[in-house]
Amino acid sequence: MGTVHEIEIRTRSLSRMAGIIGEDLTTELAGPMSAAALEALGTQAVFNVNSTGAGGGVAEMLRVVLGYARDAGVDARWLVIDGTPPFFEVTKRIHNHLYGTAGDGGPLGPDEHAVYEAAQEHNAPQLLTFVRPGDVVILHDPQVAGLARVMKEAGARVAWRCHVGIDEQNEHSVVAWEFLRPYLEPYVDQYVFSRAPFAPEWIPRDRLVVVPPSIDPFSPKNQHLEPHVVQGIMAHTGLTGGLDTHTHFERTDGTPGRLERSIDLISTGPRPGPDEPIITQISRWDSLKDMPGVLEAFVEGVAPTHPGHLILAGPSVAAVDDDPEGAQILADVWAQWRSLPFAMRRRVTLACLPMDDLDENAVMVNALQRHSAIVVQKSLAEGFGLTVAEAMIKSRPVVASDVGGIADQIVDGVSGLLLDDPTDLDAFAGLLTSVLDDEQLSARLGEGAYRRAVDEFLVDSHLTHWLEVILRLST
Image 1 (cartoon, one colour):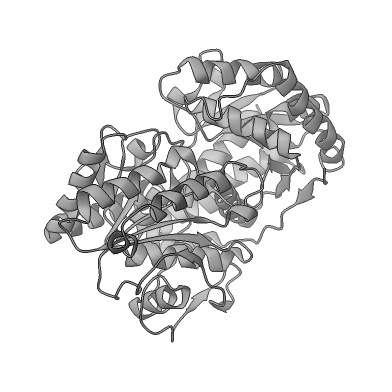
Image 2: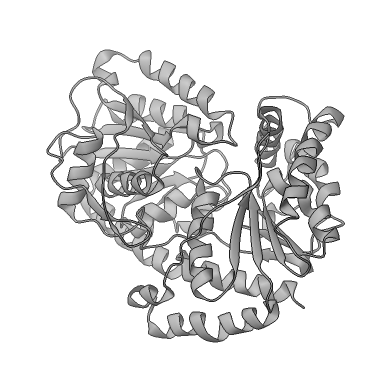
């Protein structure tokens, strides 16, 4: 097992937000609110602790929000723990249970507690070399919940941030919460959830804070790209045909970048033409994202009557340290793709995006979302689903499941279309074809999506919530 390491955080300028959210809101965020939080913190730091520095929405959000917090004057830091494969198997099982599913079907009993606690005991002494009494420690998700006791006993002010859950607890989620409860209940000062219903009943409501996730409109994943740059990136990565003459973008640190890496593709036949409509889902290779269901709905309910191409994209499975399930899910989708007739296989691409350079990874996602006729997120369960807000800020029509935080983002028929039952593939295909058939609907949904993303899901709102959490921890 390795060591705890600190992720470098680049400061991001709050002043850039003024052109989108207005001068008044920007001034309020950078002024009175930040001043109050800084006064409460004094000389103390805010440590965020999780289990991976890359891959997935949590790592992406931390990189953004902490950069803006630094600009506001907060000594914001980010630490990543390490774990063994058995540890991550246990935490993935907890993760799936919190989403109300059995996951791999394994137990969460005494042996799993022993594996879990061994990892916490390994990481705790290393964390104590960073954290001082009075510091704020924000522990993210089940992987690090077991560190709450050590942080509290060290004199830190402790918050636990949970990004996953379901609105109505079931037999699986109850098992996971009972596993986590003894690690959390005696030691956590504030609980932070993406949605209030995700919190189990034993969490005191006066210590519960709801903080919806957010996106940064200036990050490589969301920054404006001219159409010729979008086409160049799509061609360079092999996702479409055409010339890759223009692949430049702005890196996180503000320096100019140009795409160098390509994408590992599972495909056959010629690439889609620049004008061929593309339906895209971008997510981890995770059973709850239901990539197989998206593929089946496209093949059975869209492709026989409509032109277009489906792209299922996710990170390189070797690069996401805390998700042992990813490789198996990708293999299953690959087998499903191989079973298709050749004429149908040529209309579907599986894409594994490289994670060696996070800015390049992000701009690939950016271009793919901007180029897509429809962005989908057919999750069976979802904590929030940042890919939805990312597509919305790009004025893309989004078709997604009415689950978890997706329902908080999309106003059905206004800023996207919601699928009532995520397992109803016929209904899903019907929503897709309705957008493909109606250019006015597509444009209206895209416009509504952009407006809602700007109003509700940009990083200014997120940072405001976190400054309020800091103030609560300091009272």
